Image (cartoon, helix red, strand yellow):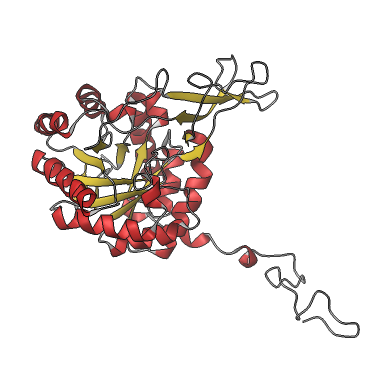
Length: 373
């Protein structure tokens, strides 16, 4: 058998594929089904100490694209392809007291599979930092193998929660440090792509002691406005707020973020997420330096927990290892991140002088009679 195992942040995985923190991991039954299907790990739906009430009606819908006119819509149509998912769902509405016994039972049922507990609190006071530590102690005592700090939820109104932490390098560092003080298991931080320079926030998390960075969460976005009804395709009483775009649509952008971070920190651990449905996409994350890959949208569309998705991923990994003669993922992890370079380093037609977009001499034009450099 091919070697599917990986060791990531000191945790041994039977295979490197996880269900991400999302609706597929919001219940005990789903998680048990996921492990029965073959997933190497799951990241629990984010747990908090704050009361959460979701909006009325649908919380997740899917964009699809028509081949004839490239139209993107949530409307059900024939002959369309998946473009992406869109959600405005908040974190788990179940309490930490609800989750603790379930973590224990799941771990007892599948002791060799990995449970990563996603947690979230605020950051505006010592009380909120203690909330992070309370959550940390509870999930690790229940048997979680690791913690994922949610610094990335794109639709939290509070200014000191979710992606508002992930946009602030100071908060990234302070919160990570607070969690690490209480943690006896590895701590991952999940960052938002909605920031000017994700490398800055990654650096802050590593300064705070993070064992790994997870990227990317969904991208802030709005649903389409129906040109016939003039209503947003998903709304409540005609109103909508920014939600998160995931799935195939974000794959290239997520890869760009991952390349920048893994180049900046080649010796650090990264878990890739965004647009993965089979190994052809997962391979890009591994080749850029990721040690594990997480999946959401594809699994949601496949019996909620992706039994066919994980079969494709495992079969694809086995075939890839056999085709290229690799013994394990570690043999090829990160071997293509150095191919990502500055635009000015890409070869030009021979004889063309290129100064990275700058004039060879100071000024807007080369003075008459002056030779070009």
